[in-house]
Image 1 (spheres, helix red, strand yellow):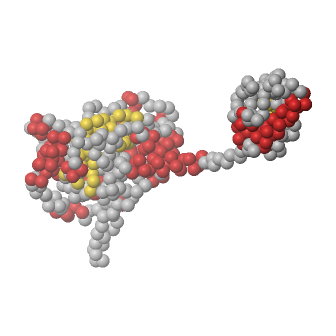
Image 2 (cartoon, rainbow, N blue to C red):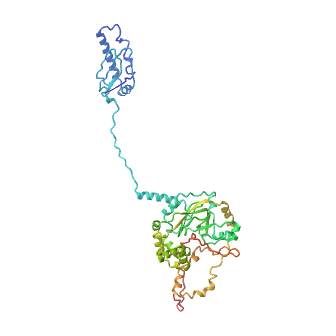
Length: 471
């Protein structure tokens, strides 16, 4: 049982009427008369409390104090009064004391709530589900960097993880041009005749005469079939792959990407920053067709002769060859004996690694793009040389192809005949007394997919029945 203060308004004097004299009145000298007055007040108090609701009395009996100045009476309410519908079980009245408190049962307090047992159900995603979610997010972000007009050959690019790990965090450059102007496309023939350089090289060399006219010698042309991760939207990032790692490229590159047949779009001014090369684990995770294409073309093209020489030196010397030994193998052309299987083994064990450069757009040459928009519609193409004019004089020589080695060489189109067949093979005119030099850089790939097993075979005449040609 706990004691609380009695609220003033409950024991206010509504039951003390003028007909009920005070206990100190001189007229009540008799003890029996006093007892009658006390009984009357007890009944009045009981009546007052009975008509009070349980909630009203419970709320009014907290933190209040009242002092009856007329009569000093102490009232005690036994336990069970509030619990049993506010019914007073006993009231004791004493004279000459102040009303201080009312004691009542602890049942007046708010009912104690039972302790709830919470059961939390949490769905924890599996590692496979998390990886799929991350992959989907990466795919959506990379799709925003893709141009729907570009049609690339399937299964020739590196894996999504490889690309995302090196392009994530590279911001796109906001091009200050409307979409129609920035998506203007030009032809390689126009670029060659106007600004100089070869129409097929990735990084064409500009002659001194052309360079003196416009002052630009940093052109880089990326074909999506051979450079699957080239920038496809102006200002977006990209990747450049090579058979071996290398340093950062000097200066900014004026990057063009092929959108459609003979249509090239200026993407912006790019930095080529060397980033993490492919590890042997990454190399093994790549599509089998990608790995086979790289190793096959490394053994077929001339731009990877130093890599082939290093592989040949390790096999012949059973150690890592020195630079002088590599040069000796190149000069002696012993590197030609290196097979695609040997190159594949070198990549698988980590002796050789695919080099990667991150392409970040840091500027956009607005006057240059506006110049293209002005000049290209007015440009008149150069007359093309008729095809086969040079071959017509050598027709009798075709009948001499009788050996097996000669017949095997003619079954597939050569790269020079099949690559960008819609363009002529005219190069920029060299300046006076300046020999044309092929840009021999280890970075200059890179058209590794130009020759493929899907190439269309060249028809070889076998003669007639009376005059057969033995192959």
